[in-house]
Length: 307
Image 1 (cartoon, rainbow, N blue to C red):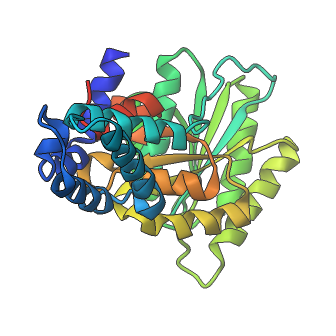
Image 2: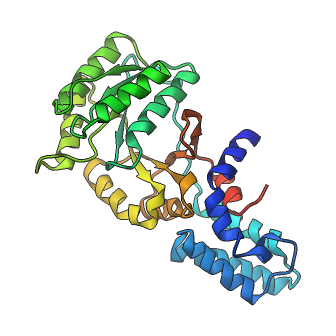
């Protein structure tokens, strides 16, 4: 757990800095005052925690301050972390890697171009491999130039099996072939990297629905998981994006990426509050091992600078 928390702390360094640099009193041992509370409020908004969550954190700190005027920064930070844990209760997605159904469990990775969907697909496959599961990648983002080559390069580097075609190929046909290959080879999981944008006037949601229909010809339950990969640096702007995909595709999970490069690490709270979709993984860096299972406890402590 210590290693996991260290990853979270490092991954959210910019978010922590955005809060801590403005609220030395909140994170120190000095008593808090009205000025430091105002500064904390500003910092929480800057980190994209949103009106609702920011209001709840401040209300609980103020209530505690009324009861104890000697309340100091570390205590206030602990209250803030406790509020986050309550707000995010039930948000941890847990992937059962012990599933053995006789057919590959399909995870459709969904998201717009630039969200980190393709690299996340490869990192997820690597993580499964490290935990002793067999996995096949399906390069179904055939509309984006170099997407297929990008996933192939990751697969080669990480020694992951991949089913791919050429740029512009029918993505649903690739998905169908990948499922057949994964099934015949007895693979545990099939990870499908779907299109993030079409170069034609075709509707992206229709293309995703087509992939789903084709997969269900092989297995009516597929894809068992439909995860949206969200760029965490977009902040609260990603909420509308998530809503659109959820309405069209029925999302079952979220992966929030690029959190190491942004000070807006509070955005995932707003996404969860709005959609109540479990968060499975966070992208906290460039390396495969930087895709980390979401932990409410580690997240809450990390963003408030607690050990």
